[in-house]
Image (cartoon, rainbow over all chains, first blue to last red; front, side, top):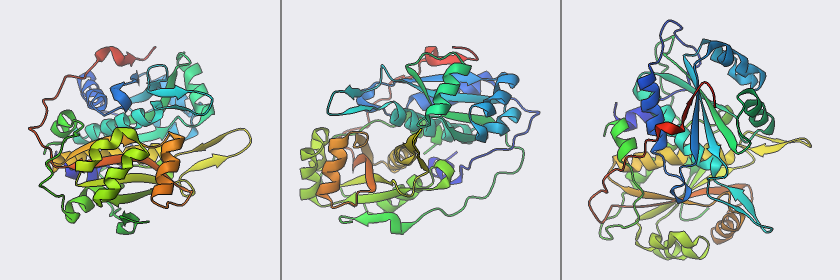
Length: 178
Length: 178
């Protein structure tokens, strides 16, 4: 698939063909794509928690209500940041951590790579919502420094791909002055 | 360019051919790609501040020291979030805003789209660093609700594209348990 075509035709997919499974090799390919995202000071502070167990996918709704369609998914990938490894500062005058931004860049690669393989995907949020982060950490026994950024729900689409809408808004471009 | 090839061969480019300019239409195309990223509750809370003025590009180093190579760029795009428009919560028990995550997803599309056009790009950070955010807001008279997430520095590469390195780390994949 052409790169521009992929970017412009990717849509969030929430209805899946429950008769088709994503192969482990395809899951590895799309995670490989995610790992090629840039990251602050090239720390690559990400971890990928893959869920293919139906009970666990179905239970996700208890920690993130917008993930109820994960019950019909083939796989779910939590893109998580290792906050100890990410570029960060913890000083009196400022505290910040690049985990969320780096994992967002990786998540976008993951969504595009899935689309290129004909796999539907939907990004559902974890960070920055503290209750969702804590819920996922508890549910999957994640260490406290492993911060889930996205819950990417994956499966082969049930229906024909949705038509792309025109999202381009030239009024959001500001040339040299606000 | 093939989507997978684009993701796997994209590298940060910091040395530019100063004799070649990026056309306005190419800048619009790569911003279009950025606007096709997903966003929380589809708020699309982004704004794109394009800098093509050499003095301004050269001055960026005063607010973000790692951007000194912007002096040789053809253009710089600040991907900014409108924190008033982004999906957010401001309550006693939790406060969060999706501006940074949404703008990160858009920034990755932007980097890939530039690469597909043979344009080199480097993501430099603004958010979450408070001093850089404030410096950019002051320098470009941005409203307080316009929060710069990335400083994407763009130009045609001076040298042959760098060889891709193998970044795939299968040990960062966790199958159904941590």
